[in-house]
Amino acid sequence: RKEVEQDPGPFNVPEGATVAFNCTYSNSASQSFFWYRQDCRKEPKLLMSVYSSGNEDGRFTAQLNRASQYISLLIRDSKLSDSATYLCVVFRGSYIPTFGRGTSLIVHP
Amino acid sequence: DAGVTQSPTHLIKTRGQQVTLRCSPKSGHDTVSWYQQALGQGPQFIFQYYEEEERQRGNFPDRFSGHQFPNYSSELNVNALLLGDSALYLCASSLAGGGDSPLHFGNGTRLTVT
Image (cartoon, rainbow over all chains, first blue to last red; front, side, top):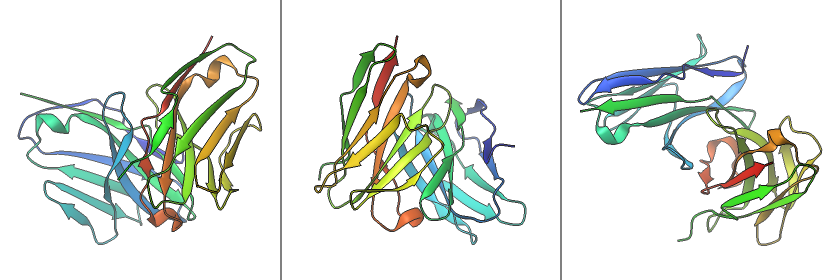
């Protein structure tokens, strides 16, 4: 089993839709969790951190479920500009990040 | 405020050759990590440098080595190149806080091995 798993998609949704991605991790000792966004042929950029209490930033909500070992990202009112690959990142210990392979989102008019 | 810069942007090498990639961290950052990203995959952690020492290493062979300079910039060296080394190589800088410190990535170096 891979350490961090994501459904690669693509998720094809119309503008205005709500879409959610999950990311599962296998190491129960994982400590820090993040979502990064990567546009085609560009570098990853931090989207948001993920906390046990949940984290909301505008249309984006991230949550962590330690019992079931997954993190989620919810995007409300999707925009065309949200089209990208969303990477989950799990830190094992303080310094070793493991990236998922990413989930591709395509928002169409 | 300069972000993370990497050079070169593109590189073509032949099997068996050696390559050096360079990275300058974001201003104020002291930690540099390197990643290999194959097409359709997420970045894979190669290693991290802090205070000019390799602090952590991922599952990469010894052909992959690095260095960090006193000004925090870093190099990634790959010896005896294989076709499978063709990928996007990303450098990220952060503060020394470890996992809680967000990663800031450079634009990457696209390496093609023929």
